[in-house]
Image 1: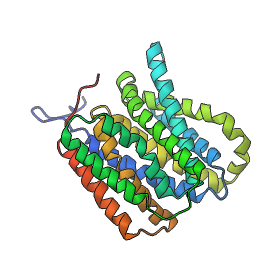
Image 2: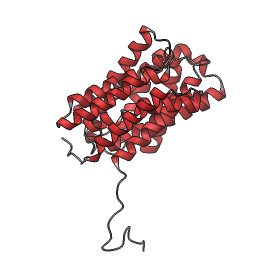
Image 3: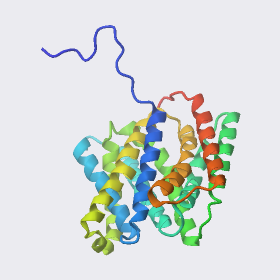
Image 4: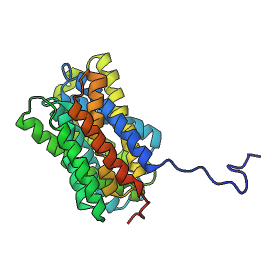
Length: 291
């Protein structure tokens, strides 16, 4: 006879805080970004983005084993859009990393979720946190480095895809149980990028590249997307968007730890701005029912 899951009268284990899940995802994705950028001398960004997506899809398909039967047309349209957003976001930001500094690329990319946060604001004081986060992003944007029109354009495209990802991740979590939607969307994203990656498959012949590329896939896709998909089931997209203001700060720190980039005093000021903004945004957090 098996023991009961919990003793009578005791409370069931509490689910992880959605805020904590988002923070874990932020640290993981930027550490993966730093490792990815260190490989661009030997691997084309498109090939590495594809390897990241393939790794994510393979791990999730084996782990989750999504159930595909009985899905409505609406379910498939939502998850297909989610996959397109994932693929575009991954490909575009890697193209930007290859052309401009990591911290600046992520700062520009953040315009997408920041715009979403402004659009979704319901209280006057939310605008204060958005403004403070925007100040932090602007300060990080002062990081020295050569900028190119293509690098800026790819970062902005990644930001637009990031905003779409936030909204579609929430819709996918509402329609697909557990991690099923994420596994399917990751597979769709990998398939969509395959034609562009075929021309660069020779770059993936090294065992070291394959191993590090798989690690990037785990850090930059499997861990953060899983955390965020769960968090967005109870976290408002506007609050999530402000929380993601930590991304530029995390990118700057990842550049320091992984790539040996140093932080100027103005960047430390930016870190303080985004940390205070994120703290203010989450103080009054409360779950919101899914539509």
